[in-house]
Image (cartoon, rainbow, N blue to C red; front, side, top):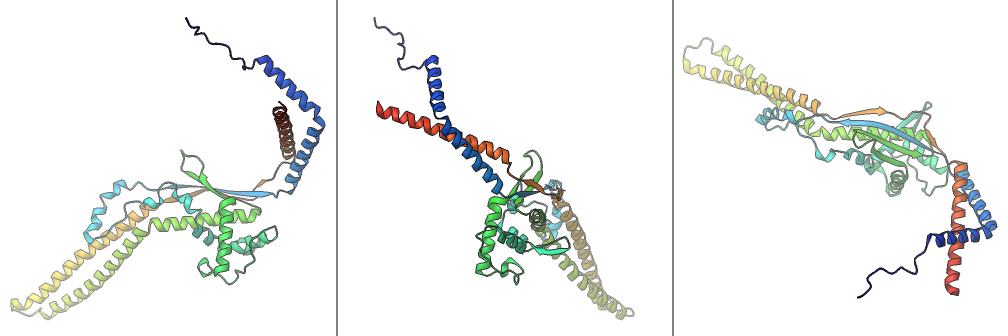
Length: 351
């Protein structure tokens, strides 16, 4: 009968052997302690140099909340506008639903438009773009020097100016700008900008938020505003026609006041019917116009700023002590790993 019992694995490492190997590795590293200490100190010095040369950055944060009206109950009122083929805008635009407003803040169009905005600091007026490029020229930068003094908006830029704008946009969106939710369970959202200049960080965040808010509101309410303009045009047209018919009806009535022949009164009666019809039509248009204005105001989304950035802006600077410790630890780890790896490799080659 075959023995089915499991045989012990000869290559299995016992706890005792593992402790011995660990003690042997520690002893080997201790024999090279001078080299390890020197490289660890060198790593700490490199970390200190990094902390000393790393520029201080400032993070400007703005928190806001968005809310839209519940328009489900207004759908019944929209039937009134259909009498004149008018959509009163009771629905919401899915293009801006959810967190899409956060993506708007990173769009090239709105960021470049923000760069052409101005701000006032210490009684001096500055334009974002020139301020950024001037600040940028004081530090190491690959951004070419291009004059924007004669340009009032992004659409008027030439090829070189547009290239610089694209470079600034990429730098801002890739390494400086951050937009996110404060909490997925809450409607609060935040936009942050980390920059070398606290003034630019503060005013850029505020201007960008204002620009996005304006664009967001105009886009969300565009259909309602267009409908209001249509109704206002129809109301003006019907009102002019009504006034003309009322004058004609009055003249017809005056002329037929002493006429006995009933047939001759037909034009006067016809004018009065036209006046009555136009009056009814005008009343319905005015009613729908007021309803459309009310619904437009009701459907307008609310964007409320909770916290604005204020001076002093949050400063972020590398800790010298932490950088030294991290540099020293990295130097120790890399040196120990290199020595143990070299020993293991030599052992394999000599076997």
